[in-house]
Image (cartoon, rainbow, N blue to C red; front, top):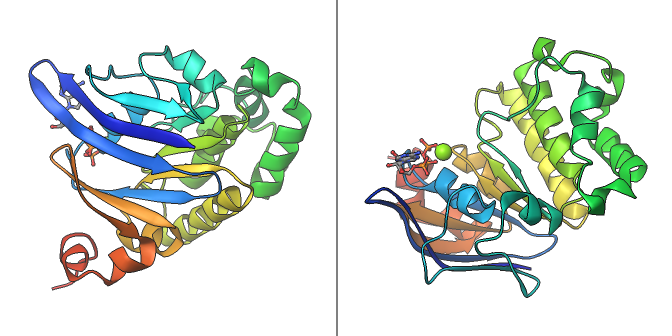
Length: 236
Ligand SMILES: Nc1ncnc2c1ncn2[C@@H]1O[C@H](COP(=O)(O)OP(=O)(O)OP(=O)(O)O)[C@@H](O)[C@H]1O
Ligand SMILES: [Mg+2]
């Protein structure tokens, strides 16, 4: 569904992504694991059109060219990014934040249905539609951020470390919700530090080091790999 081939990205002379290729299908949850500074956020930003892709790289979605396309057109093509730190509006209510997501033409017709989907995925938001987002817990704010992205009616959801700062219980709840979003037919590309839980729910995963993919496999195969256990699962 989304095909990324040989994309590189630079900050000045610094090469943060070096020829990364990967795919995510509909109904598939794919995790990217990598240390701090490995290039994970840069990868998601490059896909979302927020960081330029160097010549030679290509991003396509169901055959449609997305390389060098402006960020709002990438959203319109069905790719939604939930950025690191969430990017929601604290002074607005839950409902207002969610409805902001419904701005692309593709999402306007189905706004009511999308809202229903979001509220069924995150029943807690339904109880708090009028609450100012700033006063919500970290986990609830993460639900608002994901909910807003879902309101754009995406085919592919990009998530940058959604579990950051959440309690173990909220974390578990979040991963369960991601499983349900995948089961609803979306493709999910998930960047996570929480390797253990994300590999548990992932269909496939990639390992990224210094801007390069250095390993790939099914969630089960990566979990069982001794090198992955040493590097990402805290095994001795
Ligand atoms: N705006 C920027 N200007 C210059 N260098 C940057 C910029 N953003 C990121 N970098 C550098 O690019 C590299 C990759 O950064 P990136 O944010 O993609 O890493 P990451 O894998 O998301 O790390 P983390 O796990 O800490 O979030 C790092 O060396 C970082 O210092
Ligand atoms: Mg990052």
